[in-house]
Image (cartoon, rainbow, N blue to C red):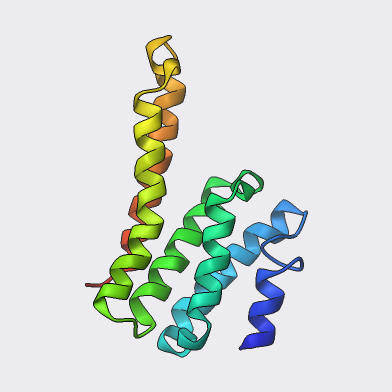
Length: 141
């Protein structure tokens, strides 16, 4: 499993310069994680760290909305099926939800909304809500 994950999550996959390859890697990694379920436990912390970096460290601009959605769903599946305690699951999910909620609050209070750019702000809010929905797809509790 390790070498496959290294390939999918590195420069040959999620961080590749080619957008189509990145997109396929996001989708295939999601399928891989869902299929292997609890067998992913030894890799959970490493993958979650990498996914959070892709989502929140400024690297997300190179990923499409669909790719980001796959990453949120991957994170939720890993948290839910990795054998973490309930408290650890809560901590992990909070680390994923908190930046989304913060970004939504910033959008709501942004000058763009006051300056009549409601459509753009609305689209961005819809995207954030979509990410929260992707997180909920990966949970079953």
